[in-house]
Length: 493
Image 1 (cartoon, rainbow, N blue to C red):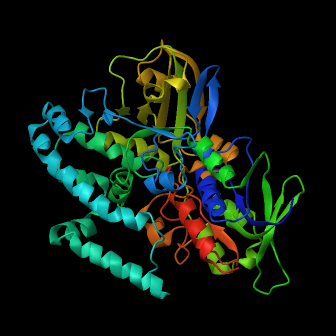
Image 2: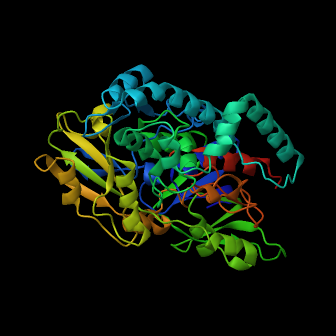
Image 3: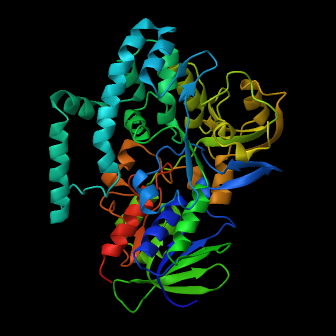
């Protein structure tokens, strides 16, 4: 293959996003994906004849509106289906996108909480609106290494002041809080608090009483959650190809090649597992920090302190996923079904994972994609996707236990379980971490992937990093890939 401007390692949604932006900017780009299909966690697979399920979590409400518009993903086949209600529980609590409807639903469980809910939503939306610009652009570095960093921090400070004194105080107070403490201040009913807490705990080995979990709760409020995306991976693949980019599947990268003639080293391409070499001026990796820096590179080019920081990244994947092909749905199953009646229940579910055991009473969040997108199942049938917390890597949970907890024993036609070990082996996620690194407060913002390297460049000249392990983090956003592509284009070659 002729020399390329850029090789993108990994064909997950961030890798495809980066490649599409680079191709649109006039770069000759090739995406190299080890699996036979693109999309990574955002891809789909055949669960059973006529049934298709997502590889990872189904909800894509965090997908950047800017990415959708810039890459014309809807023209390439992307469809977004917002879900409403946003959550329901077996105990009869249902929350809706419309605040007034949610207030009336909460009132049946707690009049006091019903009165608190509108003010709570208003505060959370205000804080999320402030945080959103910070999380959709490179994280300003605290040591202000350049004029651009200083300008960005000044803009951030001005936006912070415009929040108003009370909201400023609340943001600084809430970010390091536990989700439990935050919700306890607003609500009294266990079921209400647990239903609200669910999204903030997905994919992390932390319970609601852990410090900093309120920050992830706010992160999950940045998009149009919950929503189902149809044709996400296919539309991104098409966007890359529409600008002349090449997408290769079934080819794994074995090493990032370095031009050793230069004392500091500079990338010169990649070698593939089949023995082929692809020469390139720049390389952008969208796979995990562990894979990128500890397996594909010789650490001599990175320096001991950087390698030490990469080695210290916590992954701790604890989310399993059970996909079900169903003959029918139980009554009242719509939106997102939350199984976990209290914060104490959620905390106890996490306790087992802290000691390397799968929870005997897991926290479940189930979605029925076929209610929004009937094309994923035959007429009259359904697909259900169940996220199971907490199941550490190296452990498993019986599908029958989950099926029984959801009351689906007589409805299941086919099933497939993804454990964290499966995600590690088949998708390349370290310890099965859906986020390529735990989304804890000490691994976010300018500390992601490691302190001092949050702006998508790396110690190796010409090598960029733009996967979920980069700022702002995991979830189906496309933002790390977009930002990394912009950083690469700006660099003078």
